[in-house]
Image 1 (cartoon, helix red, strand yellow):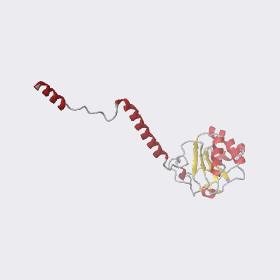
Image 2 (image 1 turned 180 degrees about the vertical axis):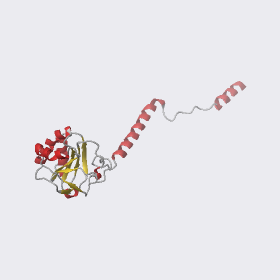
Image 3 (image 1 turned 90 degrees about the vertical axis):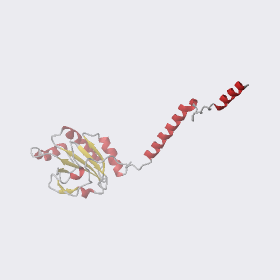
Image 4 (image 1 turned 90 degrees about the horizontal axis):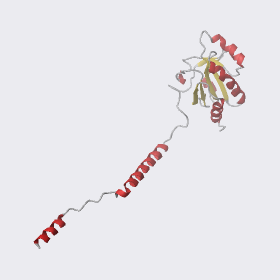
Length: 200
């Protein structure tokens, strides 16, 4: 009998096994659910920020310039004179193959948006050895928009132009809304111009 009591005492003093917080059968399901909730929270927070509608600005962009630029006819113009118009700035040179290939599209754009608040300004980066070729080139290609000679001081607001052709589209306030490096399809320009004009 004393042995039975000893056994009972041993049984009574045995520590009960601790149950796990999450049933092993549902462990993977719970962790998956928590992970989905965390991802959903990050998605909501990330998409609730007010992001700018325009793309990134060109390197070192500080806004348009009020300095004067000289046209091929000797006139002085300022980019600020074109506020209230959508402007396509095209950096190019007579010796640049892709530039020559893109000129007919620019001539066509000028005709297509004739009578609207739109202008193209060609910016020739020709230097001393080719600068005299600019006017004959314009006549040969039927360029129907103003062309100015590149002036680093006057155009410093647009940052560094690493290669040509490089194009910027400015909205009616003079703010850059898109930029392209290299030969660009006309359709891209049309889409951006129409958007800046409020047509799409």
